[in-house]
Structures are given as C-alpha cells and as structure tokens.
Length: 264
Image 1: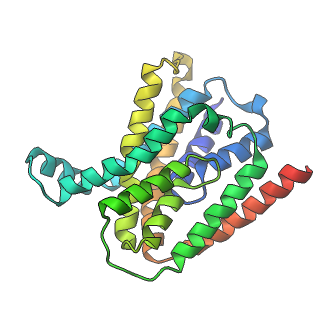
Image 2: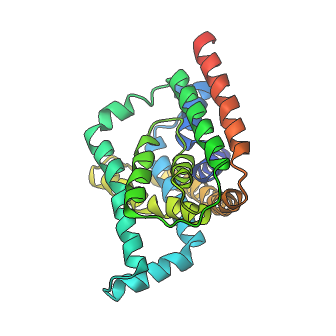
Image 3: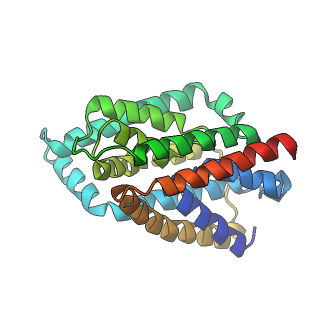
C-alpha cells in the first residue's frame, strides 16, 4: 500500500462511517471491483487505525457533550447525563451479544456476497426514505428506545446496512427528536469501536511493521479529517431532513450491485 492508496481509503472510511451509505457495504463492493489480491496483508491493522481515527473525530465533534457527561459522572449523582450513559450501555447490549455469539457467521457474510450487499443497501435506502418523511417531534431517548436502537445497530453489522443510517432512522421512526437521534447515534458507537480495538489487541490479531508507519499515519489523518467533516455535515442533514438523497444513492448502488452480482 502506498501513501495515495492510504489517503483514499482513509477518506472513504471517514465519509462512509458517518454518512448513511454503509462503510462495510462499500468495502465489499470495493473488494469485488479491485479483487482480493489488491488488498494488503496489513489490512486488519489499517482498518483498526482508520476506525480509531473516526472514533476520535466523533469525540472532537461532540467534545462539549462528552466533557459534560464525564463531569456529571464524577459527581456520582443521578442526573440527565448519568441516565444518558446508562442508555448508551443499554444500546450496546444487542451488538455485543450478536458480535460474541455469531462472530464466525457474520464473518462469512463478508466474502464478496455482492447480491446480499445490494439487498441490504436497498433496505438502508428504505429506512432512510421513511425517516426523511417522519414528522418532527421533540421526544427524548428513553431506555426502551435505546434498546431498540441498539438492535438496529446490531443488525447494521451486516454489510450493506449503514450503522448511522439504521440507528438514526430507527430513532426518528420511534418519534425521537432528530437532533437527539443524531447525537445518540454517533455517541453510542464510540465505546463499541474502542472495545473492538481493545479485543483485537488482546487477541493478538494485530501485527505492526515500522515500515508501514507512513501509510498508517496518512490513512489515520485522512480518516480523522474527513470524519470530522462528515459527522458535522450529517448532523445538519438530519436536522434539515435531507436523508432522501442518500436513500436514492443507496437504492441505485444496491440495484447495480444486485445486477452485477447476478449477471457479471
């Protein structure tokens, strides 16, 4: 992998992590277009690095919220922020259960199954379309809603289902305020990303070569900067009810993937 490839892949990760178009789905389509032999042996480490970068970009965008949450937790009192953390923990339960119990089955879906990815992209398109047409409400996130959104996040492990699209759409369809839905969606994934990184490190699944420092750094910076821009942009799009644009995009890409998988 050279620096240009790392920058391009970093930008793609930073954008698709937050924009509701499925980063995993685009990765599978990219593998199909480029061929498995074009993927570097260090791809797992690179993937971990760019995911870490997008997690940090989320922290930067929501730094004020995170500081308030941490400050409230240190008071050891029952307040809005501590309840919010509790809802985040509840939302993590489905993804943790699915990830632990069905890890091998999930990995089997990431083997170039383009038709499946296309179908999931169309499902993402439907969710985004429905969410875009939802009426405005001022309803907050409750514990039951957090669990349901967590189920949507667990389903979004499938390639082609956008995590941000699924969680935000589910929240909005549950009647949750769009701003609160976007905030909850982006903050709820931070502990999962750091947890996955910690698991990979403890399992010894990552190997590092000093010769790869340059392209890893380039990918990290590209994902970090593009992640900040995409996260900020996505918040505005949700507020302005413009998810239908991404719905059309996912529908078109999904149909192309299905046709390509069946006939090419």
